[in-house]
Length: 316
Length: 219
Image (cartoon, rainbow over all chains, first blue to last red; front, side, top):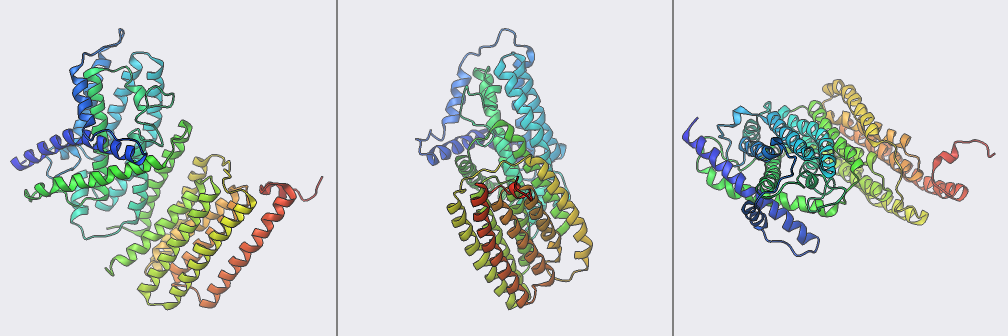
């Protein structure tokens, strides 16, 4: 472990923390513009977080300790997840501790806690949202794993830094399985980040909401942490996709100067990705909750066919 | 650059397979026709690329034939047909898409395992795509079985033909020109006749549901 490694790890963490709300703001702004609405400012999520951290927290009377600690746990999970995804550099000291499978596990851990906390206070909305969250989650996770395995089969590694290093350094090649895996990943990330075909991120008090009903009872700093965790999740998902499908421009271990270029490249890639996400959200209509298993089942099958195509066409 | 061409062919092959799956799960007839058009385009691109790699000019002709017939003419005709039959925005009730998809993936595994030993013996540049072509044929076949309306069945038939042409192009670098022309003419005439059929079915039963045709006698 070198000092440079520690530095790039810290830099990656700070980038994730402070860029994540900006990414959410960017996606919201793009979406509002595309839908002919006047867009909120790019810095709106920061203002929101600032305001929420200032306020006094109100708790339900029967809330247990789990309810109180869940926001910190979820925020911690997302922070750790953002630490092991190579955003700026592949020289991450924390990365050998957890590979892509552990990343999926971290998301699952956060999901379990947010669902438990939502059921803890015993409101109808909370337990309904928790059930729906689990429904989405148990279908999205295997699909995400299969997307990861598609990349693992090509690079012979499940570590995300390993995948990025292998793909970025290898001679440019077109892997047809990534076409299928890319479609699957887009579907999964829409579902997991509570985006339009599955959930609408900006409605409150609707019977169809998933993410919002989970955090309905939270207020002040707890809500701020959960909102921040949600935007970190979007950030980590985007970086996970970029790491697998567009790994170029991430600094290698022995090239400290590349770190300077890596940040603008990352911002550019995220801006394009966020815009595309807004386009997809604008073009699709929200589907019924019972269509979601179909949607995510399709994503899973796409990823599996990607694996099969790898076998058929041969890789490496 | 020349190294990327076989990979591009594989990419288009995968795209054809992807569109086959999209067709199975598509409920709207208009989108089905657009998907069929896109599949035709991927097929055209693949045959042009194989022609470029193997320096066979008749593959360009075959690609151009597919372009004119399956990307431009037949979709245009189908659009006109569904406009006239007034089924443009029809939504077909499909039973249990996840199960259909699972059967589909079974078909893909079956055809991949069938094609793998064959493609090892093949010397053509895109021989490995045989499995994909076979999977497309079987998926379109399944689509013809599970759909109950006439127009999606015709599209299934045409998509199966796409798969067959793709198999012929990848494995043998194209069939003899005369066979190619014959098949193209067959498809064209087939679609014209089926178009007339659809009008007749509609005249007779007031719907395009082919379950009406199952009984031999009127009672």
